[in-house]
Every structure is written in structure tokens, then in C-alpha cells.
Length: 315
Image 1: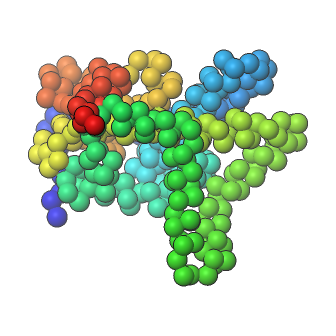
Image 2 (image 1 turned 60 degrees about the vertical axis):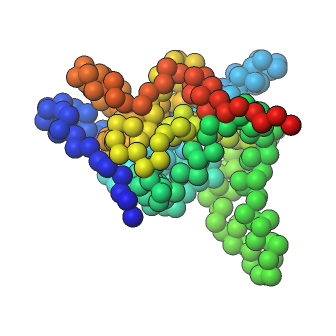
């Protein structure tokens, strides 16, 4: 198996620079998790206080982006970056980040570290996400419509279960196994529904939690995946070009790329660096003139244009 080429941090940074870049924190990760939940609550409260189509669309987008934010912070926990104490890091990552959005840190970590080990090599488990690009505008538009209409959500949440139900195994055992696997997610949803019902807002569970998760969350997850690895060369030998860093403006950071996830080239080069230090890594590399060889994009729209540049085949 071909392991992705690595870069040694001290070949690029002085010991003092690397100490700053790699420094961990006992409060920054916790603050970011609290921030994600704070934005979710504030966006929901905005619509409850001022119910109209504009505030609803804004709430769905903000909440869906912070649901992605929770998944990103689970990813941070997979690298041990949320808290210096591993038990605290894993508890926060599992129960406050992964479980609410139906993920599992325990399952995600080995899969994701394999992605880093074999980034853009044949054994990369995430290679399937970037392989279809470039595609046509029509194809990308169809994918985005499926995301926004809940089709992607339904396929991802219920597709595996429906596939198993078609086999010869006892249906009751399959269903019970799926319930056990999804227990943390179901408990979170039950808790949210109970709390909202006690406040007389039972409908908000569906309108302000499930709808964002079924629409905006899948869309921005797709956009993030495209920006990170689409059009990145397979078997790329240069560690500076295993992933793409996208320069995100404040709107993109609010609605598409929270918590420094846009600094993906730096993340692949220094994968155990806390996400909040990735902008610092980028600035130091830029001062040294090293970002010129890095794979970058001026914004998410530019990446989408490139990713959908394949000419349509005439009928």
C-alpha cells in the first residue's frame, strides 16, 4: 500500500514557530462546541421571535451549517484536538458533537485516520468522494437538488437499513440492531423533542432541527467535500497538494465552512494541529513564500465552477 508522502514540520518552521502552531488548549475546543450550540439556539430563537419566511430560511441555513460544525468538531476530536485529556476530548466529541447529528466518533476515527494515511492514494477511503469530478453543471445541480429536497438525507439515514431488510435475515433482529446502533442519536432527538414540547414548541424539533439536518446540512457537507479534495490529483507526491485550502469570506464561514475547515491543505500537512491554529500556520507559511506551491482557491464558488466544468454530452 502506498502511504501518502509527509512533510516534517521542523523542515518548514523554527522550533518556536512550531511550538505556537501545535499548542493545544483546554478551553478553545470546549468554547467552539458551546459556540456551535449557541448559534443553533440563537437561530432557532430568531425564527420563534420573528416568524416569517426570511427568518425561517436564515435559521435553517445557520442551524444546518452548525450541524456541520458539530461534525467538524467531531473530526477535531478524532485528532485529539478538542481537549488535551483524551477522555474529555472523546466524551465531548462523541456525546456533544457526533451523537446529535447521527455520527459516531468511535467509528469515524479509524476511518478518517486511514484517509490521512493514504490521502489521494488508491487506498484512500475518501477517494470515492473526489473521483467523480469534474462533472457537468447539470450533474452537480441534480446532486444539490437531492440534498436540498431531503433525498440525500433519506438515502444516507435509511438506505443501509432498507438494503438489509431486503435480505433473508430476520427483520426484527435487523431493526433492533439499527435501533441499538442509532441509540445516541435517538436519545438526543428524544431529549430535544421533550424539552421543546415542555416549552410549547414541539413543532420546532421538526422545523428547526430535522429540516436543517435533511436539507442544508447535506448540501454544505457536499460543498465542503468538493472544496477539500475534488480535482486533486490521484497519487499526488507533493504533501502541499494533497488537499485544497479555500479562502472563505465571513458569509462562507457562517453558512458553509465553520471552524476553520477551509484550511484543509494545512490540516493534511499538520493533522494534529488544533483547527484554530491552522490560520496561523497558513500565515507563517505565506510569510516564508511556501503557500505558492499549495493548492488553494479564492472561494467556494470558484471551486464549484471548476468542479462542474466538464462539458455536457449532447443528446
